[in-house]
Image (tube, rainbow, N blue to C red):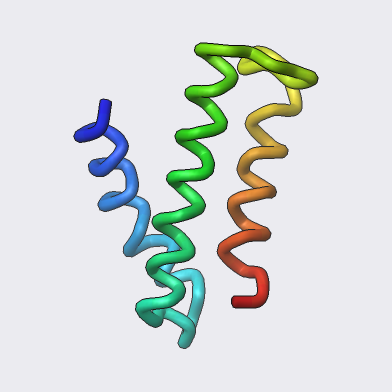
Length: 77
């Protein structure tokens, strides 16, 4: 699972940094990496513990998690 997570980040990182025109700094790279860590932690928590109020099966979960990642990556440092 760890290798799969690293592969996901390594494949997505250049594409996400390309969308951050002129902002592809070391700090931005770390923000993207941490956003993925947040996503993986949230998904693991939903699958293993399912504390609610949202589950892995809730229709809004994917969109809300993607929005949270985007807001973290694009937000103020």
